[in-house]
Length: 314
Image (cartoon, rainbow, N blue to C red; front, side, top):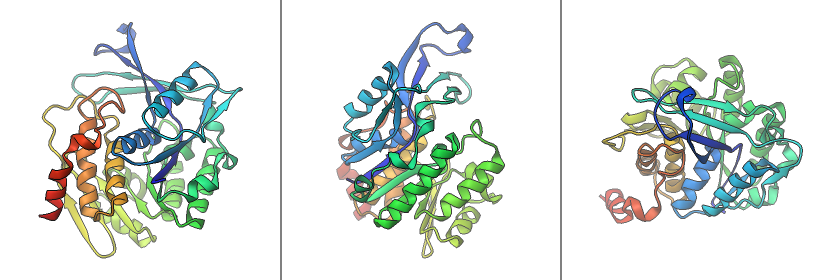
């Protein structure tokens, strides 16, 4: 197993036209959830990935499970809940700004995840564990599950990669800051967006944000900068990596998860941090070209492996 991850995935309804949802009558059904997004993207890049979660034992739960399994992700650790539902959310498409998101996830099956839902044997087989800050915001038991997952990963020498993915609809800035700073200090690689880094540290530059987490013992920090690319820093080196140009941006949702998957793919392949970030930029850019969360993620054959290899060797 290359990567293991866990978290909530919901059914996503995307309107067929642009404008307020009150004027929308038709939707396309797909899925969305940061951890599953990363898992699917990694599977398309040729990696073995396991996704753990809870789903309602309902039609939406079956849809989510079958969708993710159909993308080549191991779903053997997914548990179906007879008492709680699968969450859903809606995306409102807008012309001149990012889409609005409406969540309906309170008391969902995933919010009842507990440490007992984690299989140490599966975790021990992975090279990397991918976590996001969405999961601990869902409930106290989910928060305990995240901390237990980190403990199991450390015990089995699995590298922990953490993306804060701050969702202020789930908790306050103060709550997010306290909990996510604690989780980040226990992880190996930390991957905030520039605005998330500012919320957590008060620093306004990638260098300042990275310095705070390196001081806390994180092995490497990657700060996502949107169209400008990303900045990475280790105790030995720091560098800006330019973004991958996209002529027409359709939807920004899912791009950060694509970046995370591309970066992880590079790390799995043994590339340098700089080259892994380049791959992250490339994969994330593909997500910008479609309205769904996962539909735009490329397969390995689509991102010119020979060209990437030439760039690395140059």
